[in-house]
Length: 260
Length: 351
Image (cartoon, rainbow over all chains, first blue to last red; front, side, top):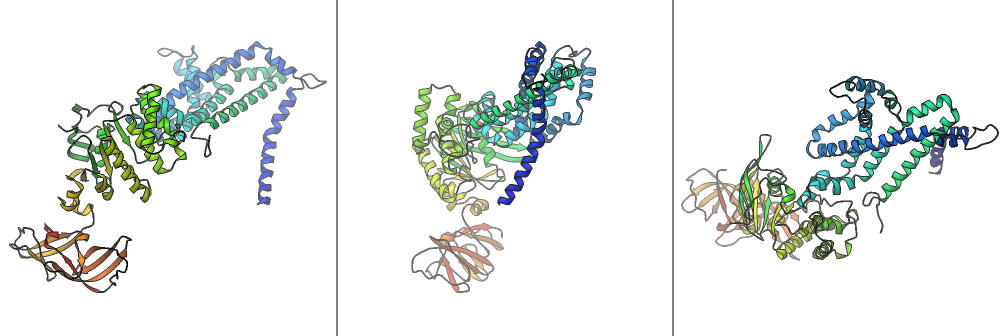
């Protein structure tokens, strides 16, 4: 047993080195803006640039709107498929996989061609970007919700709630959503991470966002750009931490045994 | 007018009839079981009362109001499922109080009612537990309390005990009957277990292939089955193929052995079938009774009873003997005589 666990640890260490070394190197690099000593000068530079707040703020806003839109689209759809039309599950799953099949560049040009002129002229509004992001989030959101719904007996729980006097909205809000809490959080987190770091759509559809801003910064300010990358990693990890913590507090799902 | 009426219910799923021409009147406070093999339409019929299925034709009338197409959440009908279906994110107390909370009852009233319900199912101390911390039997009791908390007009139980252990099943069915009688609540109970149906029901509806075979008190269903299906499905039944000897006096014969019946024989000749319950047969010679000679084929010790299989001609008869200490069991291959009174015979025309 000991030998075996020692062998496993070697792989964990090697894996960790592979992942963390570039991060550590980037972080160190970002501290070397002043050539004589380590400092947070690059970070000060980032935070004193109004462009950072504008672009990052935009990305967070796009992410928030995308999450709401995606949830409103995916949860009722997948719930309905589970409840009434299980034969369509595979078709819905296939549709949600589209962003993996169609490259973002192709999708972006397709959107521009389709929506740059009447009757649906959307390229002047952020709706086109949100629409693209919702499509991009589909595989993650679908999978998260689908897994969550499979873990509970959706049909019987729905019928039990209905027989107790609950209408559709109450069933969704009080029974389905709470039992999907962890699944929804992971879908929301993945969507957030993808949208905040997205480059192609934001750049081609020409809306302010964090991705294009980082690329632009790279062209002129190397230290600040790496500082930005480090910050976005820290943000991602902080989100993971929050999700984990919230997931643990969900009653009946995470707690396996013991008094509370 | 009955409290709950099901009139001419037909339900068709993609050209197959699940329920055909179902008619039933249930009185207030009555417990009626739907009994039948899986796929006989019993659950579909129950679900038309709950509102989860809309009958293709026919109507459901509850307390004078037609509810055939009313949405399930507007019916005030309590339902208990085989899979318990407790909400995993809520405590036992919140589960029981769910229906009251949805109908926006004041908090004090909810907690009072929840306490009453928990006391009723003898789980007053477990209100803070989550469903996954309870045993199957406890979960199903909570589901029962949850369904009863909304003071439904009708309680519907869909195979509520099928997922439980044999011992818990017997305990819980007695408890369900006790609570049902105490509250006087009109109840429909779906089951495929004939013992369960016979033991707790006021009336039993036996169903097969979407149709009602017989409706009656458990005693009637068991002792006076209306169709061969009911006779075979409810309890064990021996079948002996016979030929007519003397139709006027009800005398038949099986492999040359004479069988006297009390039944009126309409056929003058040809084949008939005599049906007999195992508990009406006994070993040994008795006066004024039919006596068939045979050989012991198998002996099964079942605890309180001993089930003996005897080969008579080309038929195998099953008979049950009460177990007593010091009883000597017949040996396999032993020659025995099986006796039964003429009135025990139930004669079916045809082989």
